[in-house]
Amino acid sequence: MRRMGKECVRKRIIEAAIEVFARYGPRRATMEDIALLCGVSRVTIYNYFKDKNELIEEVVLYEYRKF
Image (cartoon, rainbow, N blue to C red; front, side, top):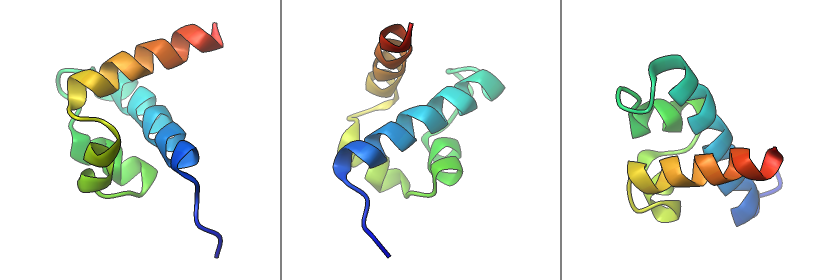
């Protein structure tokens, strides 16, 4: 099985966060919810983002770039 590159994992985390934030709202969503949806551990998410606030900022930038 091929290992995913760092940018691919980062994108999966952001896309999972978008879905979880839409479902629960950014306040109620947990890093565990996001980790479960994208199939990585919470520790992996924290390797890419220092906290949920940074992830929220990245989600906003990601959506802005798509627009």
